[in-house]
Length: 533
Image (cartoon, rainbow, N blue to C red; front, side, top):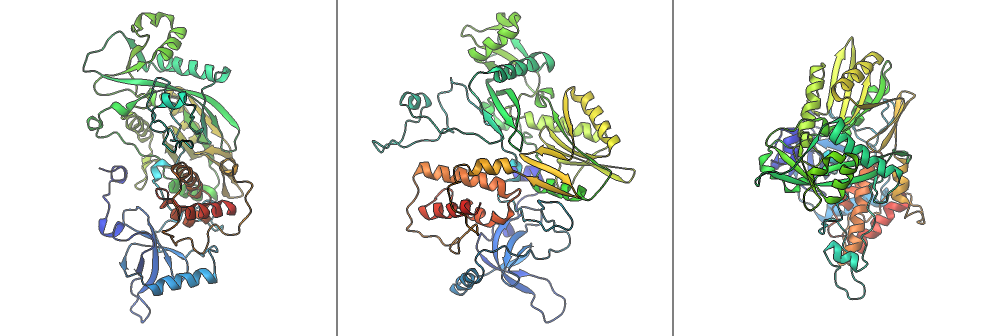
């Protein structure tokens, strides 16, 4: 089963979702009112919405607006249609288009959640399950293979760079720095990194009792390698948040077939905006954010025993904190431990944590939304309280009494939590500001970091050109290094477009289709988009 089927419980409708593709000409069914008015209208297919009805997003010729429909008839794309589209571009070259009225029951994503304020469209051009920028895993120096390192071309010989990490380092070829803008992997030692490592190991062995050292394991036991990373975390406005150390298990060697229920949902971005829109104009509610410390390692492990092998470097740090564990060192200096709790990196960890958290919330009177299991709500005294779940980060809208009740039962269940209250909260890489009966979603730091290498470019008034959808088959392909840079840049912009820059989503959606075969023409279109920023 695909992640989508596991998440939604609904199998894809192949006749609808796969019968058309981007740019196809269709006739949309408008239904009948027993009049002489047209019962269909011409449109261009943009992308599937991924909902249970198999709806697609279209661009309507008659209204020149975005519409959503679940019934259509695919037509032949003729030269007449191409000329008509070109004429539209000449008359109004990629100016912002009005949004057509949608049928009752069709939800509209909002960036600024105010009832009287127009919204940008925020279509799901990528998987909604990956809405937050993930922490990068910094593999140990003992790992010679690094599939994620960017290959660089040898300009002197024209031959590709060596694939083994150790050979590349010996040759003086260093991969470009990789960072997520929200977290940055650090290898240098300072007071912050040292304290973060000690705090993580103390948490695992003492506070949470997630690991216990063992001297030996059976030959058929499942043993995973441990990876210790330290990241510097930033708030959405760019301010330093904290140093965070994390010991993770390398779950790539685990047999996925042994864990059929290993997936867990994460909050969809459109669910977040819907909730913001709901609470924007209401009074009597507080907004708060809860971060549960060591969420996974507070979750009991189930099933057959799983062991973690820590390399010599990590084991020496453990012995430095716990000298009594020296007797558990292996001849090669490593240390074996049994996982008593669900360690980060294990394939089953996220599923076990989500089940534990939702069981607690169900017991406290909350129910899950039918459309998004990460939206939990509870009704009391005419008020509706809401808890949004993104792994171990909770965004809460509740009354003062309910907020305090939530704090109490979460603290009782998980010992250590961090709760922040206020009208301005950093959540999922966005700064949420609640004032004047509306929400303002700010990602200024992310935008500045994305544009820091493009600040020398001139300014454009439109994100795309009139030839955006034309593909010049004779345009030269980008080199692999430039193509990878093109790909990563588009991914960053897509992350931004899905949240606060709906005005560029059409251009970004098209460029997403070009990342595997980008040409000089596509690079020029990307530069034009950056000019618009």
